[in-house]
Length: 169
Image 1 (tube, rainbow, N blue to C red):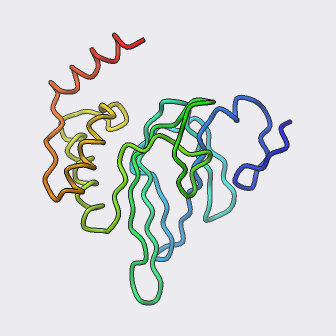
Image 2: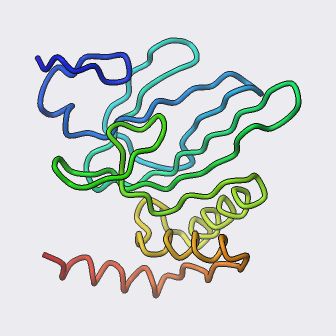
């Protein structure tokens, strides 16, 4: 057993240590942290409002955070993240341990909404967003940050990504 705490739990074996852990919270209309897409390897329910989902290295997921108080929305954010392998460099972000390769980070509800529409557009052509090229999510962030519409992700671009991925070492 490794003695380091991980989001309120103890790591029991080396396999768990290689995963990226995301804490999801749901207090209706107050704090809502949820996944828009992603295939998680493990899930641990902490209580009625919180759970931890864990992703294998190289998995891609979209993590949405929204919170409000008595005066309105406090935070709206979406991060599309690639889970990292042990000893790989990463960027930290709240509720994700240890962190990940951030492919897209968007703040503010109007831009978050546009990012969600970009995810919907990928699904509309019959491609699971998990399988889309990581470069597409970087492109979406760049375009939305600059105030432009992202170019659509097409079956042709996806086929090119699959070919490129097969030839990478």
